[in-house]
Length: 315
Image (tube, rainbow, N blue to C red; front, side, top):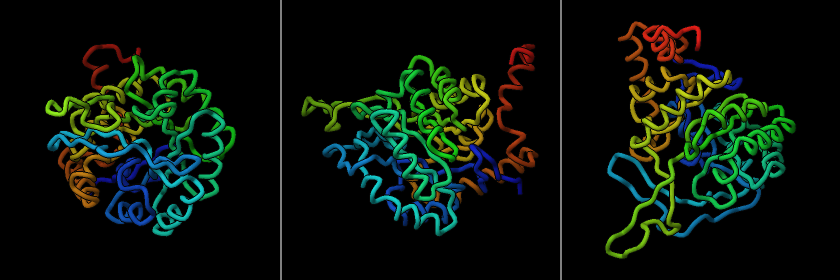
């Protein structure tokens, strides 16, 4: 079987499949369960300084198997309570990436220090939630803010720092370059795409918050395009996110330039057993293609494009 191990942001992963933040990651038991089911690593729920209840219901709208529209409002128990959950996942041997959100650079830096103290292997900065006022994409849509926040976190921790970027921008490559200037070890792309639904009978938005974020297979072409653009723009690794439910989806992201991928909606649809399926199917697919390991595939679509267009030197 092909070698599925990969390395990203200083982390050695047994396979490229990471549990995405916000799905199945609020408790230590669920994080441990995802790893034991086959995930290469796990990313926690985004954690803030204080407990947060999130938005009132309804918070999720499902579109068959095309994805979810959600506006959860970043509910979480707060950083003071969360280290015990991380300890449970770490005890199972899982590489744990701690996701944090904040209102400004100082808050992000404080949370990063607390996460480091809890023993996570790396940090992911949530600069991309599309529906939380004063958080996420509202502060992560400008390159200057991305660079400032990333730099503040990097200056206060020894851990690898991953900036999770929003697709709700006119130039995601500029955000990736800003994260790289700030010292990020990698970037994740993408978070959910801003969207909404309206109940025609009640004549009001379906979600209580109104606007939400769309995830799942419906956004895969957006995520792929963003990863492709970012791979060309920066030297740091890219983690692909958005609509990955099959091994073939993951393969496309790898060819676009991702070194690892995050799985979210597929877990919500099919449970954590999907990790074992993805690992098995990707291994079989690589064997069919005569590929010995992932390194041969990462970014290969760029090389193929360059060869066909005669512009290899420009890339």
